[in-house]
Each structure stands twice: as structure tokens, then as C-alpha cells.
Amino acid sequence: MTADTIAIAADHAGYALKQALKEELARTGRDVLDLGTDGPQSVDYPDFANRLADALQSGRARRGVLVCGTGIGIAIAANRHRHVRAAVCHDVSSARLARQHNDANVLALGARLIGDETARDCLRVFLETAFDGGERHSRRVAKMG
Ligand code: RB5
Image (tube, rainbow, N blue to C red; front, top):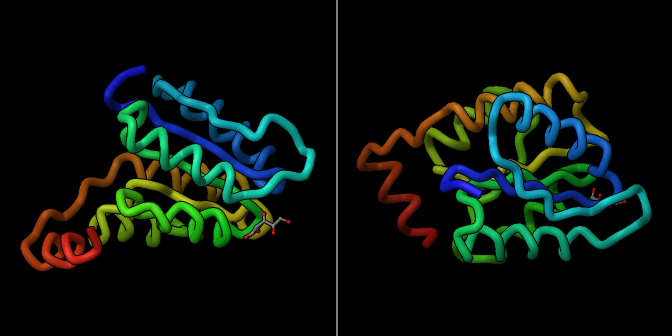
């Protein structure tokens, strides 16, 4: 693991997309911490959101990717943890703005709503975009801490 390790987790609805994104991360030289699920059997998305939140808190990863059917349930669960700012993104604009304005540390994707290609684009942009860092965005993010 490195300081830039990306943690990834999904429920059964997000399993196939998680596998594809994991390959993409490895192909682009990222260290990946796969927190499950490990197959298409039905599981409960909060369990996997919690695993990923724990990995961020312990420093095993700095950023994360969560996938469920819509991205919504797993993001809601992750956002119950104070140190998590999970953003459900459907396109590269939302992925870019989630980083620039919200300093999101978790990308949440809906495998039943977006295609693999769009998901890959969201992932690339999310990881490549820095927080804007300006006073107004920093102030707003701090109010959520
Ligand atoms: C599972 O069927 C589905 O409800 C879940 O993946 C997610 O979409 C919930 O928000």
C-alpha cells in the first residue's frame, strides 16, 4: 500500500463494475485495496460503505470508489462517517466538480445507471482533479467536518 492507494468496494449490483474499475486502476499503475464484495451474491451495501470508511480512517487508503446499483445507497451509508465526503457522479462534469468544489474523497457510481465507459471517465477525472482550494470552497467544506 502507498499513500495514494485507492480503496474500492461494491455491493452485488456494483460487483461487475468494481472488477472493471479495479483492472483500470491497476492498468494505470495505482495501488488498489479491494474491500469486496467478491461475487454477485446479494449483500447489504452499508456493510461495504463501512469497510471503505474504515480503510480511509485508518490511513490504508486516501481516496475511495464505491459502486452499487444507483450509487445512492452506498453514498448515503458512507456519508454517515464524518471523514467521508462521497459524491454520486453520473458524468465527468459531476466528477470534476465533486473534487474542485467539494473535495470529495469518495466517488460513488451507479452500475445500473451508467455504462462502463462513462464510469471509467468519471474515475479518471475524479482522480486527476485537485480541490480548488479557494477560500469559499474551503470554508464550506470545513463546515461539513
Ligand atoms: C440493490 O438491489 C440496490 O438497491 C443497491 O445496489 C443500491 O442501488 C441502493 O442504493
